[in-house]
Length: 261
Image 1 (cartoon, helix red, strand yellow):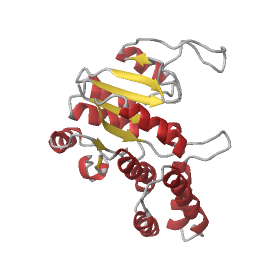
Image 2 (tube, one colour; image 1 turned 90 degrees about the horizontal axis):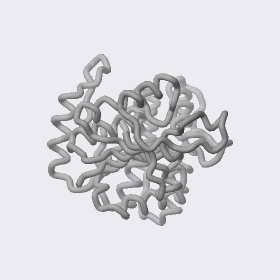
Image 3 (cartoon, one colour; image 1 turned 90 degrees about the vertical axis):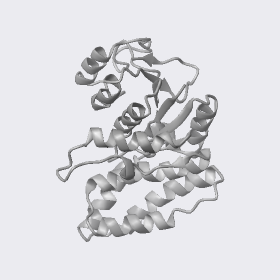
Image 4 (cartoon, helix red, strand yellow; image 1 turned 60 degrees about the vertical axis):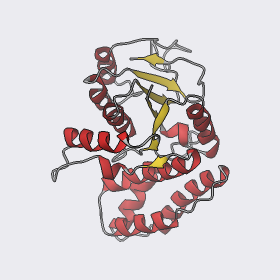
């Protein structure tokens, strides 16, 4: 059995969360391909790393002061690395990021660095191969996603890779996870987040609503259109066309079965 496992930002916001993710992956040998998001909020007053990258890019690309912003981002990753006791240094990556920010490489590039750096950390932590999304996910000159070329190249690459970490492309780890699942003909795409699947009603209105055990792809799209934010609607299509089920799971409650789509 082959599974693709994607972990959201809250699941990878700190070294403590990384360790939970590591335990989940190691508990099932079929979880062979991992798609990490950028570090999310550690608490309600915290800032997502992706938002920090956007702010830093805006400053650097316009000639404003950006040093403190870049240092704060670097500190977030160093805290994770130190907490995991890894022998890993990201100075070269941050030097490259700084140069590309000044060169105005684009906000999509800025957004993707959060997943990219977390992917490097995750690959070292798990001992999996790291595959840069930029090497296997393709767009044309207008920025349109080239699905068939991507699927062909990614399938070929992963056919020779037993276990790998592939970070999200352009800040979209949900969609990247779905693309990877299609490429390897996965038996299951597990999408790990901070909720135990889709709930029967809005938890902001009704206290402690129960999760939905099973829904269809069509029902998932309707929920996404109505504002349910557990899974991005664009992440449905690559797996739907291949008939690959999606399982929404809770990183903080791995014993819950979540919602199967």
